[in-house]
Amino acid sequence: MIPTQPAISMKGIAMLLRIIAVVFSSVAAILSTVLPLIFHYSVSNMTIISVAFILLMGTLLTHGLLTHTFNDLTDYHSGTDEHSPGVLSGGSRVLQTKTMSVQSLTKLGITVSIFLLLMTGLFIFLDYSKFAILTLVGIWGAVSYSLKPFQLAYYPFIGEWFSLFPTMLLLGVAAPWILLDHIPLWAWQNALVNAIWCMAWVMVHHIPDRHADRKAQPVKRTSVVWSEDIFGSQAAKAPAILYFMFIGILAVWIAFTRPLAGIGVGILFIYSVYLTIKMNIDDVDDITKTEKLFLFFAFIIAIWLGIFVS
Image (cartoon, rainbow, N blue to C red):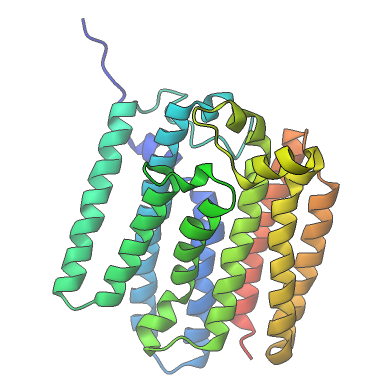
């Protein structure tokens, strides 16, 4: 008898979505620029909610499903997830727990990709060009981060700047771009902070996997792995600290026109640098605790920036 392969299941999809990470990054980025539209602009709330809902569905499909599906498949074949000791890192574990098979995960990735491409075509046909661009950028982020010939996650700094950053930045400015036909300064500020903060906690996310990433074939040479290889073990924290420093510069810029917003970001930036410095990179539980705090801070900052726009 031929053994049955694990099929696509609701449990598998729920694991793939990694909803906590999606809510505290992508959903937070949407709220950060939707809240000012509700409180400070004369756009109907129903229209704002409708656009926000479409953006939410888009981020669940691109960030939640497609990105994690491709990432799981690539990291499974390279072997890094097999050796990961992480609690939050190391993929969704749908393959390791045999909740889904490689075949079913591949089928899911192809199905979601085709659906998103069809939606892009529909948006173009209906003259919703901005939604089409947003969808294509979301697909680019998922494909370029993990799949060959790009596989940008396997190169230091390239994955976060050319895959993660553009998708998060565009998602952050999407609502005002669609509803106002221009992007106000506050929207650019909010989107930049949210995107770079996401990159900072992703760098912490990679720390527990650095030894597993070296065992991968090909080697997954993340910014964390590269920094540790070049500058020594404690330099594994350097990419996260670097991105937090960018947040500090943005906080100063924001404070000139939005003092409360800038001060709030500045306080959490300083505290986050302190937490990163004191974090024990050889203690998976300590790293996980710190990463959870950074996810929580990401949501707080996004809401804070969305409230204090003047």
